[in-house]
Amino acid sequence: MVAGIGSHAVLVTMGEQAPGERATYTQLMRARGVPSLFGLSLAHVLGTSLQIFALSVLVYEQTGSAFWSGTAFAAGFLPQLLGGAVLTSLADRWPARPVLVGGAALRAALALVLATGHLPPAAAIALVALVAVVQPVPSAVQSALVTRLLTGDLYVLGRSVFNIISSGSQLLGLAAGGAVIAALGPSATFVVAAAVQLVGMLLALTLTSTPAVEAPQGRWRPGETWHGNVALLRDRVVRHILLSWWLPVTLLVGAEALVVAYVGEADGSASPTGLLLAAFPAGAAVGDVVVGRWFSPRARRAAVPWLFVLVGAALLPLAWNPTTLTTAVCFGVASAATAYQLGGQQAFLDAVPPAHRGLAFGLVGTGIMTGQGIGPVLAGVLADVVGAATTITVLGAAVLLAAVFLARLPRPCGRRGPRGHRGDSVPSGRVRPGEPADSH
Image 1: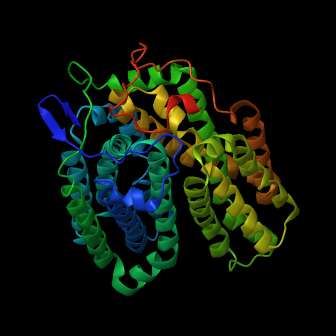
Image 2: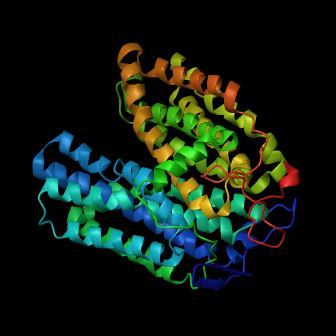
């Protein structure tokens, strides 16, 4: 297959999947370019986690202020909202390989600058925030690239592996992050983070042939992302799917943010905190393996409403302060059930033209990051009034309420682009990821 953006033409071998065939990890790892993207994603998450952890510790050592330490932690995330709102339309205009290589190189350079220890806390935080603004662009480029490298059930299995990598990195960070800093100190940890990002850059360099689609016409303008996002949200199918992905995650993150307070209310001992926090990424990893690998495409779509409901139902017992083990199971089950999102991946792709998938995935990420910021704040406000345990149950009930309106996948109504025009269906044999449309 030959595809191109402007003068960038490449010959690619895609991971293709026959209609109705269940994908395997072996097929996935044989798809050209996909193992490199998995490695790049792992390096990105691990390196960034080490960097943020080390910066928070370093800033606290320098200032003795919990406020500045918390600000240092948030500096790697909150500014991405700005980049997601302004820059992600560039993901549909720029070739993938240079963007992915450049993003990894920029993250490595940032870690090395921080390793010098010469920056005052405010300057270090500002530099981290500045780099964070542009990070949604390589993230959106990578997500859009996956849709062009994988087809059929392989695409959904690939998305589940990216989720597993993220969950696994969280577990690894909980298990080893503090130990690395304790053994090496913050400055040396920055160097380790830079080395990890450089490994990701080398993996991105191996993407010698990356497929592309025709870029949007005309010059890029700063308002292009905003107008494109608004147009995407006007589409009934896109809006429904995005809200179904954003709202439960926002509420579940709110519950996760209350774990420390919940443990404090229960018995005052901090010892169960690590187990309960680890239940969230562990459950998510299990859910993605089971639903992504062992459910057929039809079963995956049929399970969406039931898994959606399970996210909320698993949180309901918390108001009655069950045992630590039961609480961990509840958190793990709720997190595992978020794998319902895999059942809507194809419907989302069908609703977005290939030329605007970078923008669309940028919008997905922006919504998730917004929810990760809003959920803990709202949960904390309510918990101050009624307590953490009751608040977690209320959050579960809110997921169930959202399920009434959002749990079922919407019926497709024709694919529209960000400018509101109907997109042409992709002819057979062209770049069309996901399952066949007639299987919905």
